[in-house]
Length: 282
Image (tube, rainbow, N blue to C red; front, side):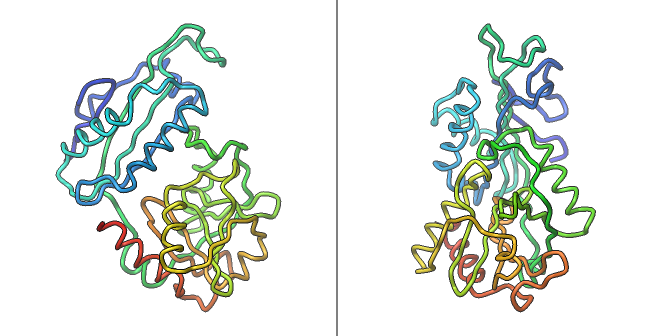
């Protein structure tokens, strides 16, 4: 669809006709949150977890939640059903709304701006799955509330641009010598058969795949540790992986000029990817 239908503040409208006032605080300040939900065979994947994170993010920055869970699900399904593709990626954004420009929250109650759109999902190619991808490392210079899925994404944009300029899949970030996350992915390492990821704290966005990988590890008897991981451990890992809604699980085989493991997607990656595909189908 060249001009897909989207939802904006109570109405379904062609994307080209969707408009917001210039004083919307999302436009002026990046004062809002968002959520990205994969759709497989027209069904939301991990819907409960995505709704819970949406609600957490709204509460974290004090935006009134304009809908209950059932209403949100209904609106999202309305957008999904307006599209031809069976597999989609839904984007939900809520800003604080329209108010006179001032940094502090408006004193008078304002109505949040709600926007929902969807596009066909684009997953890694078969070649990327088979061969793995390269990444580049960089210092994490973002703010300290990364657990909020904020639309203020300039730090992530710059990290993604850094990866693009190096011709690689992602920038893997480190803060004070410890692994945090990539520009739009959680990062995992494997050493001696143990999968490890950074702790779920304010330094990373807890991806919905984080909880899924915990479940997949338990079901497949893969030992999992959540702890601070040094830069040296990442470069010396047997395997490195990315996880996100669009990447699902993806092996990293090169970081900067260093080959990871034997330079091929590893055993734990293959186990988790296969288990992920089963989870999608259930």
